Length: 174
Length: 437
Image (tube, rainbow over all chains, first blue to last red; front, side, top):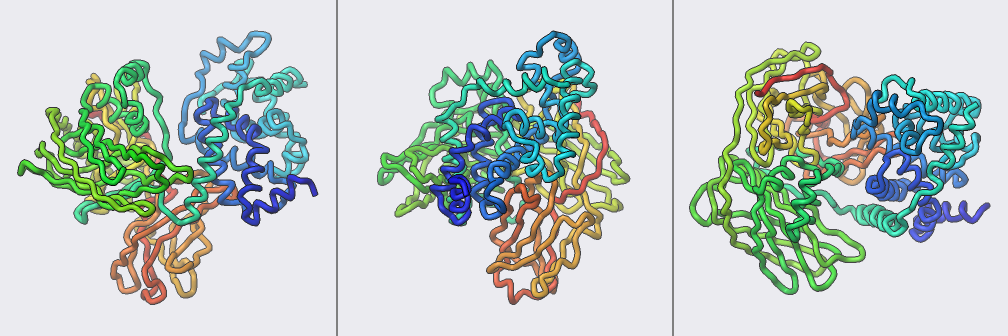
């Protein structure tokens, strides 16, 4: 058993120090996830607060210590998706994106905007794969689906992303 | 195939600056919020509602509104305004009131045993009064809760209080030396009193004080703007009449009445909003008192105010309304057999259980749903049960929230028990735009 897994077990039993150590361990991953969804520091920090809260309240529902990180990222993504829906904000209009769409290398800004224009599943899968650097196997466990499905979704997500970047994205309003 | 995209995605968040200190603060805050709730303490606003008012109070998540540059400029030149703006960032109406110089500075304080209460300032209109306050203490305070708040007219003029919101209690593991929030009063007849006395009782760890502060309101109170609407819309067969709108500086009140022949009970106008000719939008009050029910068929809905704007055109817009069939308006349970006898279509409630005097359900919902579900509770003989506390835990990754009410002496209450719905994840949808002016 890894040291991390022992911490998870201690935290489930109610060891606060173990819980805080775990959050420390994954705070950068959580922050990057929040930032990729919510786009600004202030909201990402608010997300960290809420996810710490939710994680603490629900430690007992962690079933497999080996998947604690994916469990935590899952909470973060649920929270972020809810926030995005609540805000119903328009990310970019088509016109603006079309203007930006044809340059050879997409700027960071475009990429971030395009990510936000994707459907929930695509956004989640790209976040897990590229920002969290997770293996297909772990993504499958997080999303609770077969590995083959993850691969299919991943391809669809990349295609959707390219379409958005190239300005064929159609409706970009979230 | 997508190498270019993959490469870019991988690099996207590699070089970001991580604000480590703020990150640790956020973790700390989340951790302590969870810890202090473990002690079963309410961190929510405390309310006092007169019996005459059936207020629907919505405790929403804090959603802040971005400050306009002009506004940011305005507040930066007035010392002490930042903390006040922090309190009202989720209310465009109050921000407009401040921006239009309708806020008045009060600066009256009283100190007792090392704790000082100051009324920093006020916004008053015919319908309501907001008092911004700050507690300061030389020693760090871990707990401070307003137990009682009273407001009295000293000049014999009218002060007819309907509700009082006392603000959030202070709970802090590391302790704070300053705590700011606001008292919000709403009136049942227009405010006329100018000389006022505020009495506040507070309690904390080894601490119990009462403060008495006298102060005057000097700003001339702006009269409401009233619009007659008398327009009926039909959404999925349900007829709803918009009778009128009263716009006050602090909030806009929309009076609606439902056709008695409707097949559904209208629970909540979820996205009712004011929209002007430029598309600028004022939503519902996001955290606080969202509606008053005059009867099941008639209510007043409160929106953030656009009082200080002079739009050429103004519309009420709505797309979705929470509604359930009239014969599904009550959730009926048997607390002995632990059975849900009746609930609306969709079956969002399950796993009824009794813990102590708490009646608890699992509430299954795909998306976050922040409204509390129940209002009046009646026993098997149709007698109303007074419930002092209710609670709702947020939706977690497990896909449901816990929702419950405290029913005194639950074992001896005659079954079945009915809980009347005040919110439910069931909607009728339309696309209505009603002209106000």
